[in-house]
Length: 202
Figure (cartoon, rainbow, N blue to C red):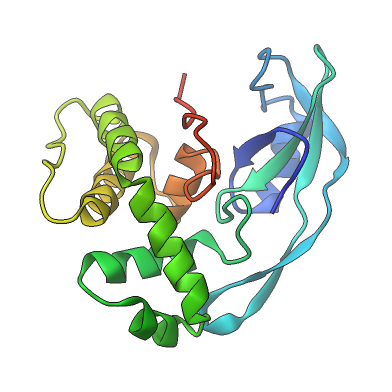
């Protein structure tokens, strides 16, 4: 969805982002400097549940120290995807439970080729995803029972996301859902065609 400027994941509600920018509460991921508002990125229509369209226009920010600009991408969105993270997450949950891509597509009212693409990309990165979220769960809550690999790599990766999301909710408070959490914790790159590592929370 966003090309060019580096991305910083922020909360889904724009009403919470603006006060944080104004108060200097958002830090540059490059140098740690204070970010300030710097216009807007190009808006896009994204597809939600049942094919409903939702317009998203991410905020831009500029670091007061290093002058780098960043796109503030809401956690409900994944890079290079036109469907919301919650919709893609529903497909992944259904696949982990044994459904095929065609019935999943019918239930979500999304083209079957689109769903197949999500599932293939996630499956290709399942080992990386599972490892990242299992480590993140243990970091968030050292007492958590990190899931052991079993079943398909895709199902294991989905389970690891769920465990990490629950650990985050216990430590940090409520969040909108496991796949919004997964979007934020992967820097929006959960399904990206890149070998770049996911960001770590320090």
